[in-house]
Length: 206
Ligand code: GRF
Image (cartoon, rainbow, N blue to C red; front, side):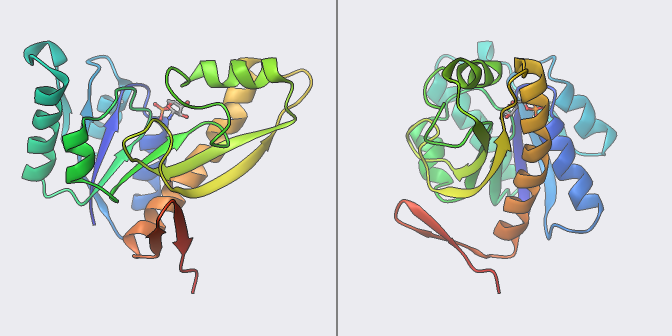
């Protein structure tokens, strides 16, 4: 399966996918990495792994739609079949979602539907978790639909919140789980074992 990865930051989730592919555990290959941030270290990680990595400057486009059309062009050129959002912090256009419906997955650092939605990403997620006093948080991989963090859930894994946790300590613990969950979801997708049934995903484990 040809994979395209969209990033905005350090790319540790991207690195986890690269490493898992290198271990021969994913029947897919990353054909392209796209970033909306020039300084995203993930671009460097891709280049080090010999993967084409492009910074797409949104200032070169007059609208979100045109920006997304550029993303679609680049992904189409590489015949991408699965789009992975790995720390990508921009909203995708309707056209993009339509074009890749059922083939876009995202990793979110909480147990959706808790602590997600517009404006709830990155460190803010962990701050809200700490402020809420919950004892369990986690990570979620889900298919992307028109909403924000609302598509069919593929995998989730719980992470304990400790009394003395800070955003940093909690983020680190959740990130470790993300780095296992996202490659696992991609592996299942590449083995054609994810069946979307309405709002739910059934996994063929056999
Ligand atoms: C992480 O918090 C992840 O949960 C979210 O984006 C953040 C950055 O991840 N999706 P990365 O290190 O850039 O992969």
